[in-house]
Image (cartoon, rainbow, N blue to C red; front, side, top):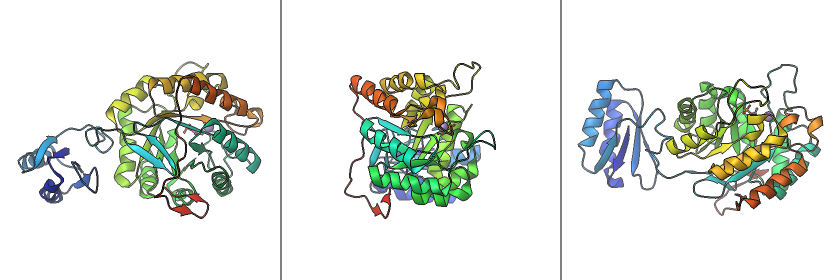
Length: 353
Ligand code: PEP
Ligand code: MN
């Protein structure tokens, strides 16, 4: 349940009641909490009793007994859109939308640096690139692993772009979090709850892809795992759902992406590359997503897509990325670019979040 306080001073009795009921009390802000989420397992009776006693407390304005399946992610907990800070780039809020770009898989220094500098020139705010790749076939390229992470850090140092990269397993979280500004949880792992909990505990912002057939509530509950275990921010990414027609790889659920935005304060972006599997459809759907008001798009780019070791057919080449940026500009949209923030903590090889 969500408790709305008339003033932050009313927090203590609510906290005590939550403790007695055996649930957590999470505040929307440390400095001046106005909304509290009381989260944990309760019977129907236990919930009624807690809601009743909290509602009767002085300084409690409202108790929202059923904020939906993902209270921390919900607009009941935070009515305004959240900003997720990823290194020097801000995603979401009322700010400019994000263009994230990069190769599906990091293949070499030359490949990555070529894409990274094209990404900066295009106005991107985030560099993506897989070092650990979830591949359907065990014989497909599995990624460069730790070497890929080092190359991503080098690309960040060269360009100033923060980096997002996928973590496939709970055991990899520590290593990946040493390098990445943002952890990516892939579609196939959206409901790997042990991984979600480990990723949350790394205290890094997370890019959470929607599962291949996940409902909006399942997607939000995956985000809830991340928020409940310590992620400072989560960006939801609609990457297309399984469907019946072989002409596109998946189907971009733009309606679902907009619907989820009304339920959650978290930023929502679209991935037209995985949604379509087709380079020719990436720019039009990226433009559609931005025009519809999503918080950004993420696209795959390769200097020579025909030579790519993964997802070549859906990768833009460097000219394609430049064209996409030009078409975004014609919509009158300015993109979120890295801003040097005074509070950042420089790390040896780049940005800390
Ligand atoms: C990717 O981003 O390269 C990827 C594997 O995405 P998804 O998990 O959406 O398939
Ligand atoms: Mn890919």
